[in-house]
Image (cartoon, rainbow, N blue to C red):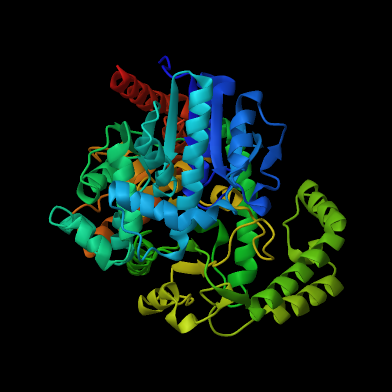
Length: 597
């Protein structure tokens, strides 16, 4: 597909400013955008010195920008020009709006006078993006005038809405694309436990926006969508949401992709899975085995990961389904053990003291074994070549065995392992802890499902697993993401790109994109859970069956699903999906051009 614009300005609050998923969207596709627009591609974001450090390399301003920068400086708008230190190193303009913020009341008045956007009771996090966006609008206005070429500006989320509305009010001749990644009102209602899918055809969006005190953001978002030449969103489910909440249907869908080249090849995936799985198994040895033992090689590793959105991320369904699975495995007399990780950051005090002690004792045993490893190898070789039965007395000296027994005795504990790795602040009111306890998931010896609630960010140096987010994923067998509200949902895709099977839902943007009919083969790689118009008990029954079936897969069946998951992830590479963006840009340029004739 050929582009029709000469210049692209892509505007997001998350350019060189990582806050959430939009950072991933914008940064991961930048190289593909550059393949179309080359050096005429400019990303525009806010300037925060601490966030820019290590993410942004400042340079002498491009000569095409210098005049605009000089003019804006007189208005208290400081523009930093340079490269975003991501793949492709695209041009980035970061706007320092600290001094310009003093104009916020005038900007709000302008938005009220022109668009009737009510910001009288706007929350604290409204003013900064609105003042920044207004400055962005002024910058693009000046650049578009000086370049005298076909230009398109692409705005992400309500946070950049004031920039689009500035250009619309000034009638700047530029194609305007607006993308919502989730409507403000839809997310707010879902976070407030409203059954949005059953009521969204009857909802009075304007009234509800005031009821939930998001009227300023909602109205800014709505008017940005209405005044864009092309309104877009990321998925079918969010398109349906936008029609109800904003009363406008997106013209183009822009599914989110991945840069598959950044992920390991399948050959590397196999090696890395074994490596990280073994590190997780070591963790399980000192987490559970001081209390009781189970067959570690028959243990299947499940996980859920994401923000602490108990209902929206489906954490409630995950826990209920694990409880059902636990009972099924016990009733069946299964020898399988499921170790289920809940990688959801929460408000922690510290690592549990007994867990640190367990780790120290475990490491003491490992260190002792390392000291005799050379002798152990020799003794094994002697026994094998001598055709002798291998017994521990032939492998270890008596003194060593006595020493090891003493060390292992120190590891032994009574009771049950904790369900959380950390002590939490306000633990009695923690939704996850309470749900686990109420479902009877207490890590008893007879339980076939073992819980590890891991309430910290996986940064590779947390003092326990010491794995990064991707490393922890790679070590597991199945990622489970039974989301209720998920405009897109990157986690199943990331898991697939790492060769890890996963579960998503038909309420997640990616889930609907991947499987419109949800008629799946035995080895889909990514399993689709039907949640649309289903009661929680129906969803729980579905998910527990998927879990049970997966737990009983042979290693060959698991590998077949790993391969398929990787194949599915490859279908959403940005090299394939970027054409949707070019299409939206072209439509916007056509409309802007038509309006000038």
